[in-house]
Length: 64
Image 1 (cartoon, rainbow, N blue to C red):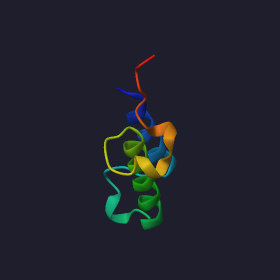
Image 2 (image 1 turned 180 degrees about the horizontal axis):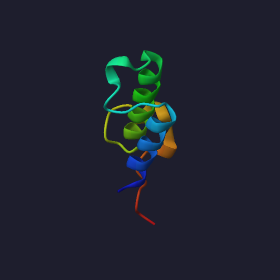
Image 3 (image 1 turned 60 degrees about the vertical axis):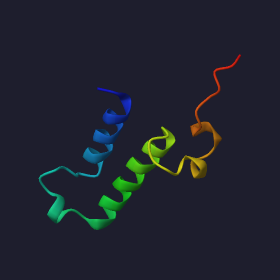
Image 4 (image 1 turned 180 degrees about the vertical axis):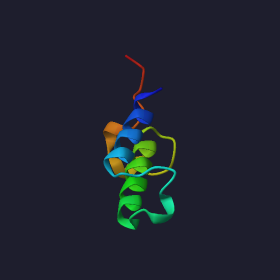
């Protein structure tokens, strides 16, 4: 399991979210979780948005 999956699972547990309680989950917690997941995906270049996160999230040039 990769670090991102562990990070996402840890955050879901911290927010007390799981696949069994989505219908009753607090909308604010779901929004917070979705934002964190999307920011993580964007930082990895997997969805649009990495340009808003900052240069540290951009792929590095492997030149040197």
